[in-house]
Length: 426
Image (cartoon, rainbow, N blue to C red; front, side, top):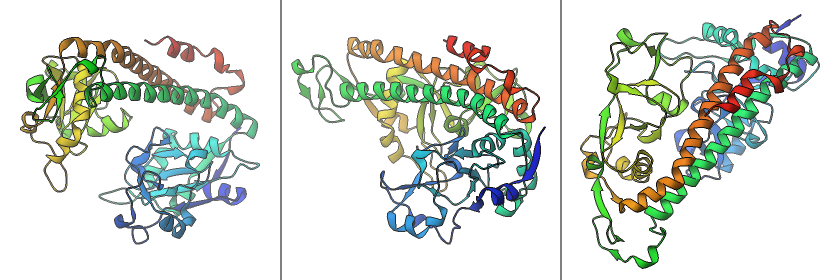
């Protein structure tokens, strides 16, 4: 049996609140500082897969943080996107304690009490029903917007605390497995990056003691190495010109845009069967994608079969390996960004591929790098596939558990076939 109450009623009962982040008049662009140790400010763009992503998070100094202390986050809070991407939300854990709820975000504080668990509410806010209600009550012609008053009216359906705890336990198993895999991926990627940097940037490769440095266009490099423009090393294929009115559909392969490179494939990602799309625009795990507009970065795709949109290059090496080329591009991205043009949206002209060069070692050395880093990348792709399986299983279970359609007391998480299948992926 499910009870129903508004978010306002639950907040009042549990001593919590729903509060929007600071307005633009309180927090200006000039208040942000370039200090990796300063206090992070959580914006909607930082809410990815239910967590706070710090990759491009803005930060403020101690004085600004103290001035806006009423917007500080506490462990157990939930941050919501109140404008733009309605439905984004992130859990605030111990690591995010004291961070700031940013402009464009909203803080939901529900302290565990006799009616509802905050962690249950976090999962409830991910259901299609809750997201649909929020989207339906947002206002704004050019950008959807939610006020605290509207969000407080959200009806929340919840079972007994005992069943809430069981639901949390089941869903947390999936989230914990996904998070553990994510951390392993992070470590593996960093290990490969450090090996590349040590060997091919600092030139401390195996046997470097016996190799002298000689002058080049990029400065001193080991004798026997070459300096080669990227246009010589690879083909850079711009994506297909998909038009929203003609090509964006609900079914088929996901169409990969800059947004999917940053956030992954989501329910909002447009799709297309691909029947009228040339095969050269089909991508799959392990492909190198170069974002030459807006984002200006390089990625190894790991979200499964998809179609490539324009503003992204598919990079195919003419020599070397995919992995070595990926790290070479990543190491030279600062040079590409310096050459980018545009005011409202930065972009890289194709001519930059000829203007920016990299060092290329003798074949035995880059093949040796592949023997070290190749297995790491293979494991990264396998772990990413596991996370796709786990995420799909969790998202399938979520509405059935919340609605009571599935009796959580009869579900043995450790024996769930989807968990077993995820362990076998790869």
